[in-house]
Image (cartoon, rainbow over the protein chains, first blue to last red):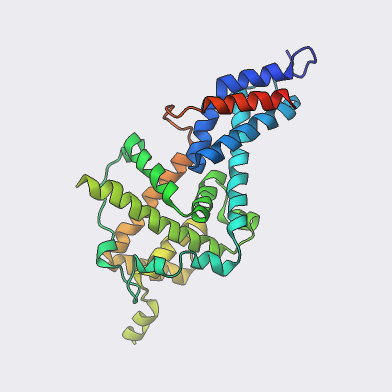
Length: 200
Length: 90
């Protein structure tokens, strides 16, 4: 049976999907944006896009898979837009939060400060399957400055080579990994303080 | 001579962590690789950083590619209603 068949009400189909899949889509979007208002907008846009593009949906495929593919693109669009809007100039990227940021970790010779020095984390092989750890990871991601968060999420969500992401964002590779460097330093410190050091 | 060579090859921890992160996005040049290896062979803290950075990389890969496990956060009922009425008006 073909959903584009005129006899079938497009509205009824998509409304039913809203009932069935809103929670999954919302959950997914919230996970990947760390912002509930943004997640709500993305879910809404996804259903509207699904409604207007319903003829592209094949009845034999899984509606949830189809909706998720729309949703994922919208999440990437969001991070890209976020990134571009906040990128005023290349020098601003490097200097966001000023050079003071690096002073949290390194002394003026570029050596680790005593309090920031990474110590061993131990080897918990089940770490990434631990829901409590994932919760902390989620928290730490949401704590990142918006621009950094978006840069970091793009790297993993797009799953494409760094060069391609830089082209899409129109920044130099150097700037991109400088942002990632700062994001990672902060993320590592947050995980360290809220998980690894806390356990001891 | 050796001292001079060491001066060229020595990098700070700040620079080392930068190279560790660069490696996730781009290839390091030969010189960068040598510098980083020399540094991490001598610096415990940066060796830990390198390991931990890889763990975070793996965690983010897993986190952003997989469907969320927890189903606890449901979409607000008002959102569903709003979407339904939007669709009615399209």
